[in-house]
Amino acid sequence: MTILAARTMRGVVFDGVGPVLATVPLPELGEPRSALVRVRATGICGTDRAILLGEFPAVPGVVLGHESVGEVVATGEGTGRVRPGDRVVINPTYYCGECPECRTERARYCPHKDGRELGIDCPGTMAEFVTVDQRFLHPLPAGMSYRRAVLIEPLACVLANLEVAAPGWDDTVLVAGGGPIGMLAALVLAARGHRPWLAERDPVRVRLAAEVLPEVRVVHTATLDTERPDVVVDTTGVLLAEAVRVVAPGGTVVVMGEREAATATLGARSIATRGIRVAGAGPYPPRLFEVAVRLAETLPLERLITHEVPLSRMAEAFALLGVGGEGYRAGKVLLTPDGTA
Image 1 (cartoon, rainbow, N blue to C red):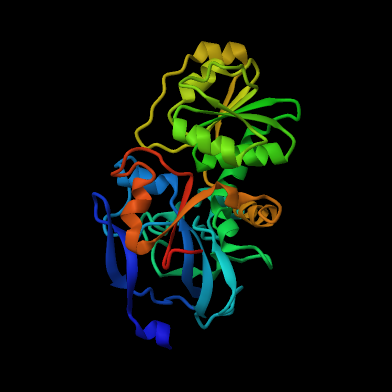
Image 2: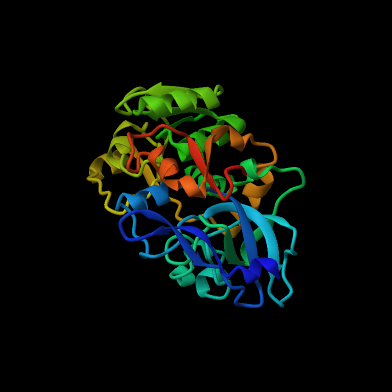
């Protein structure tokens, strides 16, 4: 076929220091149950940013990216869940389905994901094509745009953490951090009838969050001392100690942001006597990814997208997020092969 005859494609490669637009081999179908997907859009995740800033490990030479949507163009010989022409969103969180963790509904902790994480230690989606096991491809609901669907993966991350947070209906919830994940968490909470407020110290992100989330109280603050919330969701990964200090007695703090080198010093007696629960959700389970696909039909996720940038100008896309640039100047940024999702 014409696509496979091309043999090469463009991809954003992590060279061990930064991103490089390179010509790389076209992915092969490999296993019978695999599928070749033409990428339509990939969201730049906080993890991608952390890799480029040296704050998260990735294999040098890997094609970056994991938040992606596209169209199936070819499948292996095995019977699968998708066919050529299907519009799909990719679940990049691998699980084997056979180990003790997977058999006891803890697939999110599958030990066999090493070497299979898209954009970290195996080829990712900041490219024209990607090969994915069909188990991890979810057909998009009819009529759902790629612009909305590309945020399904981060939505699944948010759902996993909010499920652990388990806020009561009358709880005040503080979302710490006004990046795309923080805005997405606040959007979901507001849609479910909670009373979220979002705290962010960067003035650009404060303005963006206020524009796209009129239903959420957005606060420009360098600390979390504005109120005493019942639940704190720390999407930054660096505010655990401060979140524990300000949360109400009997409250919950969820550590959501992942920073490889982040540490915190906590007063054990204060946690015990105030009845504070500190929790981390880990990766989302497969069932929550399917929930995210359905929930995306009713949530205006595309509100968070501020820029679509073609692969050929990928340096501009990263600069918008403070990688080799002047700090944050964007909300959610998409990389696309031709500039439009």
